[in-house]
Image (cartoon, rainbow, N blue to C red; front, side):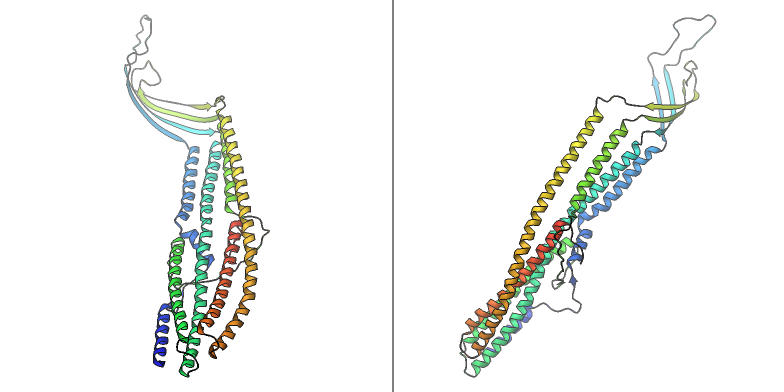
Length: 430
């Protein structure tokens, strides 16, 4: 019987050892701030920020080309059914009419002199549009923080529960050795060790469940941050300093302001588009006929001058477009008000959750010392054969659950505190 019990302990210890992760010399560590930083760099959407900058730069460069001279080359060959001719005959003078087939090749140069600042206004609209696009990317990336926070702290909770399981296992093995010693000397019945052996096997089962859960969460976290994570990565517990009265710094607020700024620049662009436009032009060419329609031969020619264009009446098209932009601005204001209202509702709920969890933690911290006293009493009673091992396991399990509840509530508190700061846009590295 003694050999059987000793053999059982060895088998259980071996199985528990195999369930434990192998300790590596240089364990991989990870912080929540590192996860936030990596997701903003490695998430596919993050690439759009640089792409939008490049696009805005190219668009602005193209718009500024409008300040440079424009050069056009034109050529045409035509055949006319009729040509200009004199309706009368002039004595002693013969005027040959132009040919029905005519040819012309020209080079036209146009240089903008004044357009009321239309090009500069277009540049401002393009810059504002680029900033709106980049801020939209920032908003979408920021939304990932809550997802990262949930995954990170879930893994952290499993990691800390693993530590509790390790401590529970060591204590049960110690109790099992003491019980086996009591069985050897006839103080306890052989069945007293069975319940402890069953509980050790349950711990092995808990290890397996915990490891699978942790692996799944780490795989999801790894995909989001774009970095391979070892299954035994050590997550550092973040520190949070709560400030409830700080002003909101959510990226959505900047997004709304940039949208309104874009509308303002677009309104200015519409105003500029109604101003007169002055340009200089020059044309040189070669054709038959040239500028002299009565010279029926190939000649070179040129002309130069100024050109003024001013659309003085557009059926109120410009005014209507401005009114449409103003409505868009009012729509953005309503979107901002809606966001701020929903955000305040969320923050109020989170603050209430934080207060509740703090109270639960205070009860956990009062329960654990009492549970520890009860376990010590049960240990003494088990050694003296006053209670069965099942009764001891009940008290021991209650202590473990109390410590697990404390861990859970502390992690939940941390989750809500970080979520509060993320929701307010005030989370920063501590």
